[in-house]
Amino acid sequence: MKGKITLVTGGARSGKSSYAENLAKQSLGPVAYLATAIAFDQGMKDRIKKHRESRPQQWTTYEAYKDLYNLVPEIAQSHDTILLDCVTVMTTNLMFEYENLDWEIVQHEEIDRIEDRIKQQFVGLLKSCQEYGLWLILVTNEVGMGIVPENRLARIFRDMAGRINQLIAQEADEVYFTVSGIPMKIK
Image (cartoon, rainbow, N blue to C red; front, side, top):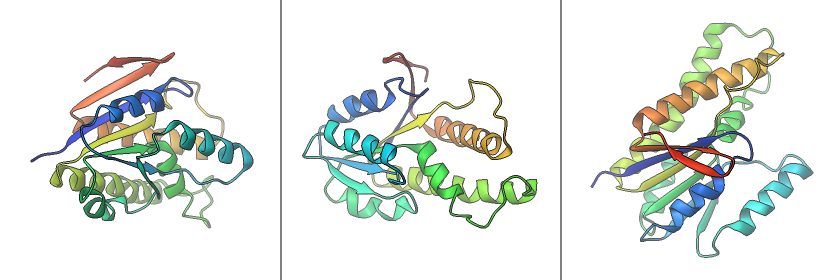
């Protein structure tokens, strides 16, 4: 049985996480929640706390952002649906694993290698969920609709996140775009 992939995208505070959670609540079986955020400051701790409180108690939460495809066999034993929140936070965490990299002077070839490694994290997760017949719901931010960022790191992130979103959207069975709390099906 082939799994299903749903991508929910939108801007900041557009209602994408709430919509994705509502989709997951429609699942006939148990839900696993993949939380990719790292609580690096008080603001993020507060955000994580609010997300935890909004989720149903019976959902199983996994806090991780790397090699998630390795979790899929375990998750598939007792879950039918995985909700990953969020792709862009996961991308950021994977980018910042390169601690000694000066993003303001890094060569384009190195950026391409890093992006390929990050893409493989998502490709592995998508393939694994499809192989195990799971419904994978991914939340992501649409970061390319604003002004061009002033610093190079932000531009690299914006471009990388946009291409990763395209990769996932291409593989997805359905894609929703949320605006002001209203989801629109675009695929």
